[in-house]
Length: 94
Image 1 (cartoon, one colour):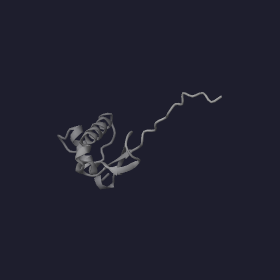
Image 2 (tube, one colour; image 1 turned 120 degrees about the vertical axis):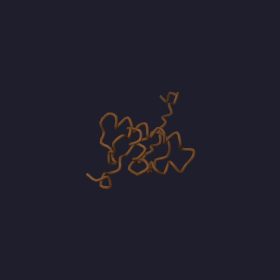
Image 3 (cartoon, one colour; image 1 turned 45 degrees about the vertical axis):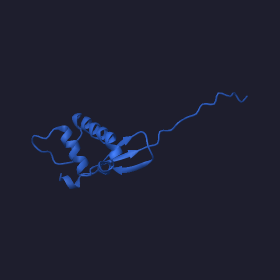
Image 4 (cartoon, helix red, strand yellow; image 1 turned 90 degrees about the vertical axis):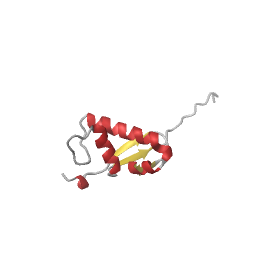
């Protein structure tokens, strides 16, 4: 299968606004550098567990380098979901 025909992979981050954005867009936002590290690490773990790479494999490339190449090739989408907070009422309404 050719690299350009592979579909984008969705990764889910549990906090933040409800949006889906390209993981590649995070590279342009300085405040998101720690999130980018987590995206690459999460994808590297998936690849290590046997997930199929979304870019063409190259001899001598590490799993982390493959994950980074997927980000640079705009193959990953990050889906942020707002963490739902449940407030507990301590007042008994009987």
